[in-house]
Amino acid sequence: MHDEEEKARIGETAWRVTRCSATEPPFSGRYWNHHEDGVYHCICCGAPLFDSNDKFDSGTGWPSYSRPVHPDALSEHTDTTHGMIRTEVRCAACDAHLGHVFPDGPPPTGLRYCINSAALEFRPRS
Image (cartoon, rainbow, N blue to C red; front, side, top):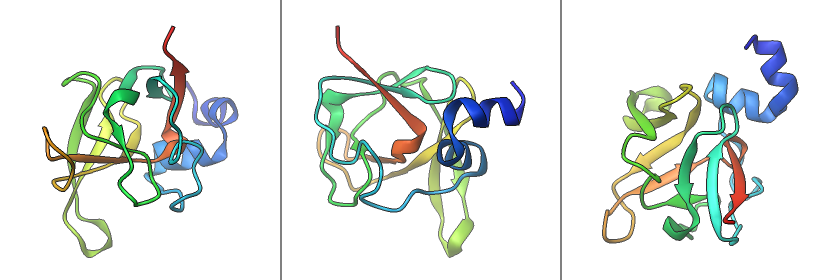
């Protein structure tokens, strides 16, 4: 899909986050305080990424999850921007930037997938 078509379909903010690695401001995204039962999918390609059962309140203002819905749902990349070394996470299916993963999450994984709401589309569990 061409950039302009995708941008028109998903919106400017989602496009900047997923295709330009932007970050939405904390406490601004539609899913940071979202508590419905279901699955969060990639806004770009629709691939399932995170289950609501693995979502937790990290206090950061971004939706946070302890694990992806499937081990192969994400790809990880070293991110050295902003004077830090972080692990960026992307959709394995379409390479959309989602956010970052940090080693300060709850048990049992100890991981915190800190994800931009703009990169996600929620689908209630049927």
